[in-house]
Length: 303
Image (cartoon, rainbow, N blue to C red; front, side):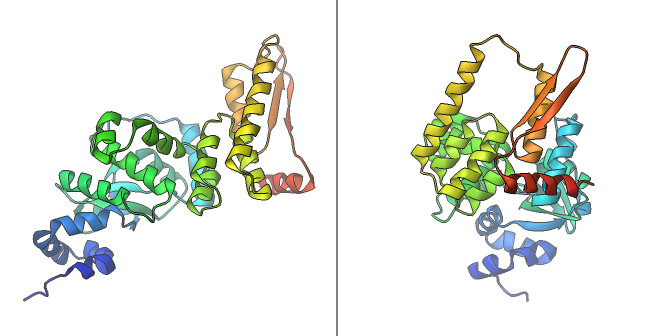
């Protein structure tokens, strides 16, 4: 007769259970709520070759340049937000959410990726477990944001339904979800506690990626308060509004996108100029020798 699994077994052996279909089936039969609850906050490292795309994925076209940028970021920083898969059987999983991240990981050459694993028919239990997970006191802001995102994507909840389920105002949830659009460096700073939720919320209100990264470095270097960061952002936005009041010499959207991608790549302010005949220049700005050396290191890595 097989050993009866107790509650402690889930916390220390969920990864082993995933690899053992007999014991996993036994655990699901005896205590499905405990299994699902544990799976919601257990990240398993799965061989990428064991994951298959979802045939019902409505999105079939992806921006290849954006995918390549994400792949480059993943190659350097790893995958920050795990994908979610459904366990089909031993050593076989089907993607539920994270198609773009999954494709970028393939392009980056990863052999295994972090994933949340779901069982076949655990929708209602998953929703309850995720909501319970959000109430934990040891979660950082990015983990809370990911939980909100998972509830929306995997449980098909609207913002209003999500607000009702977790007992939070929609504006609060929106502020958390905006964190997932921040650059990887800022998300990492939130996760390791280098900056607060207040800092992150202020940075999320800025659309200029280079300015976000520059301001992050200033926060870490000078230990800026949230109020100081908000004042800097207010001055920056006022300056931009002042410039817009002059004759509009903004770049076309396509070239502005190129400029923004250069800024994100170097983590510095980049000016791209081009005249009507197609001639122009790209200027990378830096504040000191250390910044210049950092930019040179980035260029050297690509040689």
